[in-house]
Structures are given as structure tokens and as C-alpha cells.
Length: 597
Image (cartoon, rainbow, N blue to C red):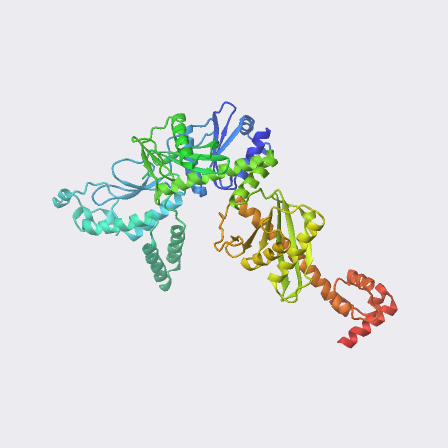
């Protein structure tokens, strides 16, 4: 496999979506769907396929493109859209004009409700499309049970009904229809049923579910358990029913959707083309920043370029904020609704594209990746220099016993474990986090100054304003305040505190800067807790064994190594102990524990 292709596969997301394979000439070879894009695409390349056609396909693949969607059902629909639009050579299925079924509420007097594969633009309402045929049949069955509707295709105009042109059919006699053809049901009453059905198809079926559950309970009370089970199964299907699809919406027709995600150096503009309610194209354009351009300026440039490149003619574009593209184009900035959902999908794809590019840089050029993160941290944390060397402090104690502190060191955004340090608290008695922090910060940087070692560019204190103030006292005592940047991180809301600033800084939860700081904090906590546990265990062992007259440290170590715990030593017989440390010492130990008990 080619190195660039392997890199593309390594950085694919673990999300549902659609993947597209292209050959060296840029021609589409294959479109497929996946519940997990990375696993599915990898499966093509990590084995030899029995099918010769698949082996030929794999050999021709040079580039992989993908579109991330919210659900597996959306992936199925998007795959269908793209295959019909792009007609890939290696896709045999779905190339014909068949499509997934819809549920139609026909525009006519006394509307019929039925499933169809064809959308006719006559004012009728269409709901779907549905990837699961069982859902379509179940919903139609439920509607039929709840609301008796006509199934005939008669023209039920008032004049035809009043003239007695029609007669009720078998459906009326068996209770499936109330006979609007002979005027036995009013238009007003029938329309109430249609309104309720429309709400079910939109997903607003709270009232209907309540009615079904009551029916199920009535069947159960009457000992009609088979009927109750049938209703229960239908309720379960209805509860799992997803009314809307982001990738196919008949309400949205012929629009272009653009979104932008940017960082210090690059901007990524994703574009989705919507035609006849379906997404038929997706592309992400990368723009290198040169003069600190704003997102608005970059998006305007990208929209013009993409519309020219793909010969787009849509009169409306959907964007995340207002931009100026002339008077002939309608600019929509949705705040909610169907267009907002599609804009969010575009933004999600732009973000994933950016992450994949960053992962590829990390693999191919680690130094460039590190430089970018350092520059981002300097900007996010309002520092004057890049934080190449960061140190983080955390205190550990349980009810004031065995207080210790840990200092972890990160260099270039990565742990430098050889530089980690433990501290036993010497001058503080009892559980006093503030005084402990003051002590260890002073000791740490007093030593670095004495030994002429390099100081960090950033100190992170695990705690809020109190711990930060205590650490500042030590820096002032060493005349280091203002020479080293220092911040505190509080666990509750991950807020960052700065000296002298009453308002904390909140970083984006997904930002790389916050992730580095959280990694620092978690590593300091882990390192401190491990040391604290070891010290506590050693203390517990020593307090028991050290009090035995005539038993020294070496004998203690031999006993612990053999018996694993003080409890087992207590439970061991004198002869068992004598086999380890000799008869004389075994007698002393045995007599000591007998007196103690």
C-alpha cells in the first residue's frame, strides 16, 4: 500500500459516514457506507479478497474522501444519493432509479396516507425517506389502527359526494373506513385525524403513544396477551422511529451550504451541495493564512472559488455568519430548523477534516506539530513566550496523614518523566493544602536556582485561588514573580485562574491547550497518589513490625517479601516464620503478636 494512502487511513474518524475511492486520474471508483469509517476502510487493505473485482478495485485506489454523518441510517441515505449522482464504476447496486420509500399525505379532499418510492410535486406532503421498510409498514399499520382512513382513489369532491355518485365499499363494512364517500364522515372530523397523523410522522407522537399504551393495558386486563404483545412491539418500533434525516430533506431544495473552521495558520471551508432535498456533493477546501485574515474574508474567497470550480448555480447559500457576495445571491444564516442542522453537519465535516490534517502532520512532521501547539498555547494562555517547559504541582493526603506533593514536568507538550519529583512535606502539620503548596514550590525553585538549572516558562497549580496565592508567596520570596508565568486550574469547571485576576479564563472544552493542561494535572495527580499510597503502606508496615524488640529493618523486608502483608505474618505459625528468618527471631515475633492479641 502506498504511504500516502496508509496515512489517510490512519487518520480516518471512528464515526458513521460515507467513503469515496478515487483513482490516479481523479475518477470516482466506489462509494460505500460505514458505521465506523476507519474500521470499514481499513478492512479493504488488510486482507486478500476472494472477489477478484474487489482486489482490482483496491489496487486502483489512490485517494480516499469521506463525509461524516450523525447516524448509520443517514450514511445509508447519503450513499444512495451519491451513487445515483456519481455513478461509480464499481457500484453495482443502487445505480438504478429506485429510491428509499416515503410516506405521503396526498393533497386531495379526504387525503390518503400511503407509502411510495416516487415524489410527485403536486403539493402533497412527503415524510422520510426510510431505510428500514419494517418501520414504514409498522407506522402505516399503527395509523390504520388508530385512525380509519380511506384507501380508495375516488375523487371525493363535495359535488360528487352530494350527488350520490359513490357507494361505500367493504372497507367501510369491516370498520377500516368511516365512509366519507357517502357523507358518513365530515371533512372536519377527517382532517383532525390527518393532523394527528402528520404529528406522528414528524416524530411528535406523545399523545399517540399514550393511547397505544392504554390499549395495551386494556388488552392485558382482558387476558388478551397476544394482542397486548403485538401493540407492545409496535410501541417499541414507534419509540425507536427517527422521523427526520439530515442528509435528505424534501423541504430544502437547491442550496449550497458553507462552513469554516480555522486556527492560527489554516482555514478549512466545507461545502455541501443540496439538490432536490438530498446532499449530492461534499468538499473541504484548505486555505493558508497569510495576513491574519478574518473568517469572514476567508469564507467569502472560498465561496467564490468553490462556486466557480464546481459550476454551482444555486440562488441561495447557507453560511454561519453574514458575508457580502453581491445582490443576486440570497444569504441565509439559520439559527434553528432544518437548514441549521445541515450547516452543523457541514461544520462537523470541516472540524474532522482539520483534525485529520493535524494527525497527518503529527505523524509525518512531529516538530511542526509541536511548534503549532506551542504557538496555540502561547496565544490561548496569553503568555509572552512559548511554554516549552511546564511544571505542575499537586498535593496528596488522606485526613492529614502522610502529606506529600508531586511535581511533573512537560517539555514540548509531552511528559518528561525523568524530571518528575516527589516531595515529603516537612514543615506543615495536618491537612493544610495552602501551606504544603507554599513549601514545595519554594523548595523546588530554590533548588533549581542553587543548582543553576533552567526554570520553566509556565507553572500550573492544581487548585483554585487559595493554592495559587500560596505558590505566589514562594515565587515572591525567591524574587521570581513576573519572571515565570503561573496559573491555577480548578477541577469543577476546568477554569483557569491568573494572579490578580478575579475572573477565571474558560477555554473551549475541545481545545488542544486545555487538553495539554488537563494531561498535566492528571499526570501530577496520578504521580502524587502513587507516591502517597506507597508511603502510607510502608508507614503501616513499619508501625507494626518496628515495635517488635530485636527485629531490624532487614528482617522486616525479608518477612514482607515472603508473606506479602503484615496480616499474613500475624496469622503465620512460629514454625512457618522460622523457616524464613530462623528460630530465634520467629519466637520473638510469635510471642509479640500473642501478647498483642
